[in-house]
Image (cartoon, rainbow, N blue to C red; front, side, top):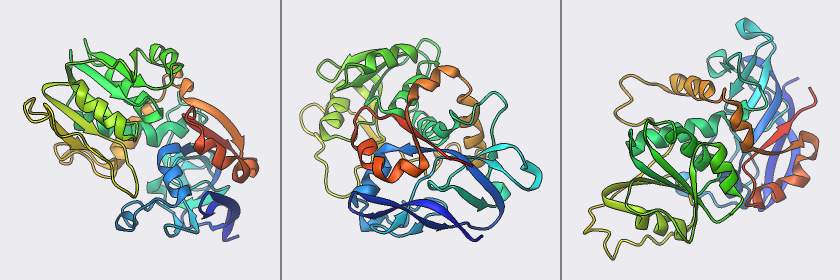
Length: 317
C-alpha cells in the first residue's frame, strides 16, 4: 500500500481522516502521537501567515497552509524493517496510522522511556532550545510565564540548575500542583515574581508578554518563545523597558543556538530530549488520551481547552 489513514485539517476548525502518503524508507507502525496544542491550534484555525508557510512545514507534511493540510510532528511507533526492526522509535511525523521515513529520521527510544511518554519529545526539544537561548545558569531567579506543556518542561529543566529559583506563572490555579511536582514554585498571573534574572514567555498572549517584561530585573533577559501566527501583538516597550536595559530575544526550535552549532546537530539534540524524558514525573504532562479513529470529532475540543497539556493519540496497530 502507498497510503495510510491520516488526520487532515480540511477547513477552518474542520478535521477528518483521509488517506495520506506512506512515504519512502523504513515502515513504522504508529503506536502513539501527541498533539502540540499551540501550533496545531493555529494550523486548525487557518492562522499560519503566508510569510511563514515554508518555515512552518513539518516533516512529511502534505498539502499547504491553510487547507487541506496534514500536519503534526510528535509520533512514536514501532519500526518494522531494517536495523531498528522491532524497536520503538520517535519521528517528526503527522498523525497517521503508518508511515515510512529514512532510517536516519528515526530515533530509537532509550530503554527506560515508555512509548506513551515519548510523545513529549518534540516539546522537550523545544524546551531545551529555549533554555539554551535564555542563558540561564546556576543560582538564577527564573520565571516562566505560561505553564502549558512547553512552559512546564522549561520549568522542569531550569529547576535542575544548581541553586536556581524557578517560578511557573499561569492563569490556571490548578497548575500550582503541577509546578510542585516539577520542582518549581507557582505564582498566579496577578502576582508574578519580580527582579528576575531570566524570564521565558510561553503564554502566547499579549498580557503574558507584558507580564514577562514586568518581571525582569535590571539588564535581565526576556525570551519570547510563543508563536502567535497571523496578526499583530502589542509589546509594551515604554515605561522602564529601556532604563532597565532589558534584552528581549526570540527563540524557535527550528534553529540551534549559534553557540551550539559547531558541536550540536538536530540528531544530538533530539537524542538528549528523549533521555531527559526518562523521569516518570513527566507523565503529569499527558493530560488525556483519544483513539485515532475518534480524533476528528474530538480535535477541536482538545485544541480549544486551555487545560490541555500534551494530549496523546493511540492507534490500533
